[in-house]
Image (tube, rainbow over the protein chains, first blue to last red):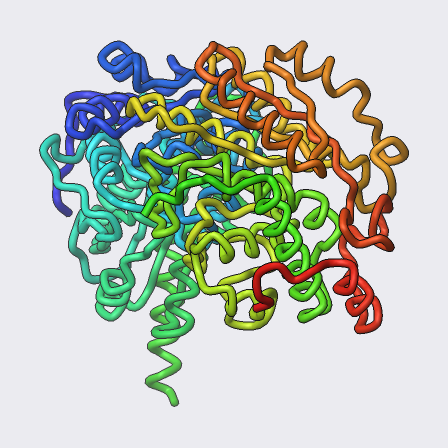
Length: 327
Length: 285
């Protein structure tokens, strides 16, 4: 197991703020909008440097999505900022018609996604947003895993033409990816090569997957860990290549098991290479108030649950191999 | 090529007659669509595209240096398509494909099929004012002095997003925007008064901080005069709201003044009668 350590922890939303500033410096057409959550979205640095390129919309997310769509006409590249819940579910029809169907170059940037928003509870902890966004034709869906990857992803989407949903979070989490990384949309990142089981993880679950990989290594299990930061378009080649080797799969995401990364992978595998698979995801429920780590444990999203899922699929793989030999 | 807009009132009225024929024939041709609001707003769209707006029928999406128009009540697509075709965005023969399989003229306007002249998909109501504001803000940021126009149904004002946008535009001084509301008093289930009264629209928009104008939308002379006046009111710190009174179904006697022709197509005999009331001033497609 490749060793990953960290000396610093930061929130992924701060990676977004830093990336937005860099994108703004590189391209004068990059503009930003916010619905009364500047501090939460870490947009202060951009606003300070480019006050004339920032629009405060107030608590009116539907209007913000429409304005962003309209701004693209003439050449602006708008980045909208609010919580993931208000970036998706609240404004689904605005995104569907004015952004996705109209193919507008809007970057929907969503913080406080998932359970790790913590104490605010289920009203704000959206666990359905990946599904909502990936179902829209033409929408790119990205869920980076740490500060550095979020910063790189933010800069990358500014250079990509088309609608994007960029999902990140509130809590401070380890920084373990390279600060100077090149972010390639739709290209999975090989975290650790292994032979026994494929673990495909996105967002905050990548660090949990690394912890799980270390625990599995101690048990003599060689886990392949792949970071799927871009859920759509899915890096199908990377998934199929890994599965061809390991023959069993665990997916891991801070999202409802319905409609998320796991479903995308399962859909690919059922068509091309069906193998035993388990989801590490929220089991079709709402969240609740609590500390992020407590919630991740209670809802089955921590390293321990990834280890358990890996053991289960390894067992199924063994059974299947036995059956095949018998036949 | 920028269209120069020197059409006289009489010429505009003639074009409007042909556009009304197009609307009836398009809706009849596919036995679906929305003739009532289309006929009511014909004079407005003809005035915009043949007199008021500075625009380029060779069409590019960004439209920098051009006036832009957004149709928020996308269901009146027949009038939009006819006016775009008649002003040179695409060939009028394509109007015959309206609402048919493999057509660029979808039931509601879309950018998805790359029809020249359409910059935003609409149909789900209440979104176009925000979009128009966004386009107006980009024009301001780029120092582009051209204007943004939008059209909305009065029933559409029942959507909440409209009021988010209504609050925003005056607060942020979006004064390069002329929004028009088609006040025909009708919606699918009946009159706006019966369904959900809109109250005093002038007082509402004025209270939100808009510069409110009114016009008879089926009197070309008055409409053109008012729109030209509206242009002189831009750049003064306030967005413009034009409350435009129209007759739903205007120009076809049996379609006028009722919500019944909101989304109903005429049969053969009704089409014949409607066309007998509308003279062909250009050439039918």
